Length: 129
Image (cartoon, rainbow, N blue to C red; front, top):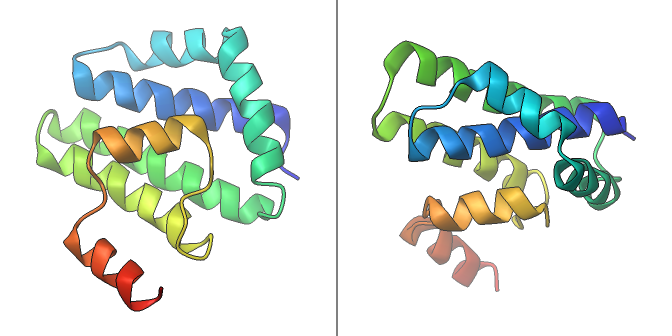
């Protein structure tokens, strides 16, 4: 099982990315604050349990994808590519979980608020129902 520290970093990164979409944030300071935040640590502990069937490599793959989104933000600034990048990372997590997004609070929030689901996803669900 992935360590609490690794999961806290992943949840903090996810929250920071969401904040960055809403407006300019200092990534370093924001992620540092989330890493120390009690609710983020609690959410990370819950996520560790939720993702207990995932290998460390699978968790690190999601982390890597979200970090690539962070790098893209720094290089490209604002734009639709930011949302697409995050949605792609979340869809990767969803697909790796048998088509259902893992019940990680920040990921569910991001997926919904960014409207990551699209008609193709709905069609796939209908075909597999």
